Length: 294
Length: 225
Image 1 (cartoon, rainbow over the protein chains, first blue to last red):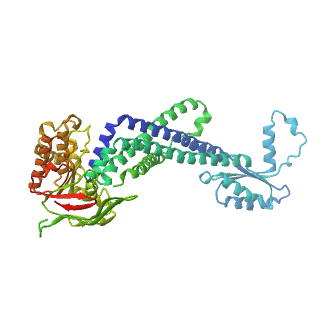
Image 2 (cartoon, helix red, strand yellow; image 1 turned 90 degrees about the vertical axis):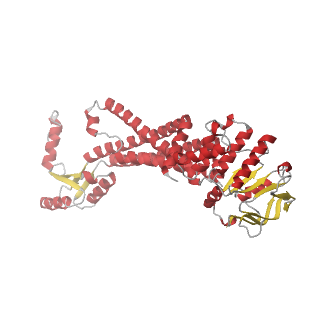
């Protein structure tokens, strides 16, 4: 069966049932829009988490009694590890100077305090390209096992919370994606079912004059694919407008500007459009099955 | 049947039973040759429609075999049924037309399913519609036509793709005498052009003075009259 004929018949069907088709497309668009909001939120949350997460450093405090000559070899050992971007040694004296700077208005606080009372340390930045909260934890754990190390700090709670929140949001996005797409398919398949019910006589007659299943099904499947694609495209456009509107309001502050928030990447949008089309076709194919017994 | 002729419809010990114990056909045998015009008669409920429905595989026999144009229908897969139905034009008592569509659209449907485009099918549709005397109503909606005209549209749709076999299921059942005569004349003409016709009717007036072969369906058996 030539595709041109199926296409023409599908367009004719859409024209004849325009209101139903438009309503269905709106429902698909709203469904996709909800999913797009979830996705944009999740994606930017991840960006925020990464942004702040990358600022986190691991601070490895060394034992005070550790011989000074061991420091260069420890430094080399840390630099040679995977996933380390930079390492900086902070001696006890430098740490004290930082403390003095911090208390510059209340110098009396540090009066009589031994300048060497703070332990020496290494401040380690994790490679941003490979950053993730789990990796920070595992690197920190390695340092903690070294005998020269007194304590390791890496904002454990922050990293853990960030990781679990990020996981929860991702799970919500996946769950919403599945639920919403199933809902879209259900709505589209029901609309097609109503159209099929209304045209049962025509389908019966087509079968009696020798129409193949492809000839009967083709226009319905194509119409539902068009509904899925046009609905998701409309949702993307609407989502983009909403995103730009909200962004214009919240980017008054420098902090938000520095986060470099983004809408969905092109590949992600393409996937939404295709998956929406495919789900609508699948729903319709299931709805049509019972009408096509010869 | 004329001996030595090529058979296009053949029934061998065909049975059709419905639960619990209704027998529509019982070991029915029948052979119809190419180019024959056969009347099938019998009282209402005798199984005429059932027999016809089995010939275009809208129903399955519960026993025996049906051979159409050399093909045993039991060997056909679902995907091959449309091919069979393109060889068998069916005319129904209730017309089975799309009433909100035009005469042209109804008749063109039989050609559209073959994949023909509008410019390819247009001239053939006009020719056939002219043949049934409705060329002045080509773009009228079927709902605006009389019963006789609607039946002629149904005939045009059944024959537009030039099927070698035409099954007519009480095509005059809803028509007055004049329209009935017109429809029979049309069928005679189609037969003269080479189509094999099986014409089911309970109206004995249609075949009392005919030289055509007449079959009677009675108690599930087919008898020659």
